[in-house]
Length: 473
Image (cartoon, rainbow, N blue to C red):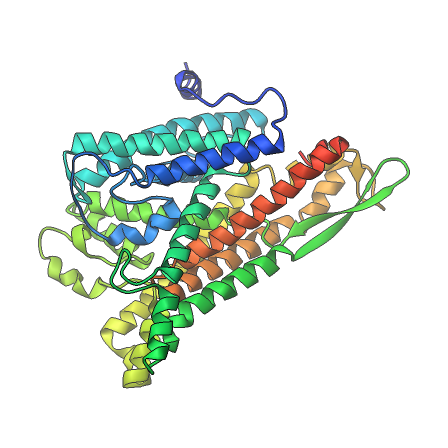
């Protein structure tokens, strides 16, 4: 029995959400998505049994992206699900696992491996949190609860994908980021913290005669990201297409954000897992140091239980984060002049920001290309869909190879440009938004909500015009 056959046999035993036998009405899709989101919020407020002390804050900056809340059933969030996909993509890209993603059977095998990997990573990350010191308590009890919470999210994601709207992962991220954003902006003073949110705090400083205009920078950046992403979603290249013998004209749009925000989700989740892996191997010679440098270069400060047991002091200068970097630079330059950027602490922080942007762009390009292949958005897949729908490009022979050749002029280039674009928006936002929210979180939320709007419009259109189902599938 081959390895793939063994995996398929194991995956057939794992329970799964049954695919609907008939088309699910739009109202029921909205209902199932709402139920999944409600369960997600409830799980985020259930504290782990046996948690002696919620420790370490390094992973807090990743909570929005991982749809997690440390210390609750959502401690690992969607991290194991995303990590499983990332590892498989890297193994396939390195030709360690031979799977033809252009073949439907190859995609089915990939999905089976991803399902098995997600379950295994749920237990790996579940026990990694207490064993590495992120949480204090009985490792067995805490690990099982964290793994159980991520497995529930895995099935909720599957439920939303088959009976709801869009992706469950996207829905959870958007829900978590939106709730945090509004809480940080409008939180009244004395509720959950001594100080109020951004706007109440600014209004208080205004009436005190010392308005803190710099405090509004994160809000202005968040609004700018929202406007830029919304505008970018409308940018596209139109490829003329014709349908039927009479040549009914139309256009096939190739958007600037062809890759959506998926590459940023995968890259951010990978960076978060660098932190977890570093905490596990922190005392392993060479590997521990390598992972610390990699973790620091991808934006995370080296502190708490990322430090080695021996001689931790030499890592003191790496106690910097890319989050809120712009404000720190502005404050230091304003107080001490332009020479402040050459001081070791701030200079290292700036170097960290540059390395972070480089790594983010590289990984976004890699994951963007994989997503185009796996999401059925490659030129070959689109050409097959257009041909099976009776469409062709006017002025050319009715041949799928012709359509594929023309699509190849646009899709690979736009995939790279779109991946770089979302990487720049996410990275710059992270360095400018500070405690309000992460740039990645704002970018993801806008992109996810926009895609949900488009899917809602498409589903509504299919219900009104059933003949369009074949084209809009």
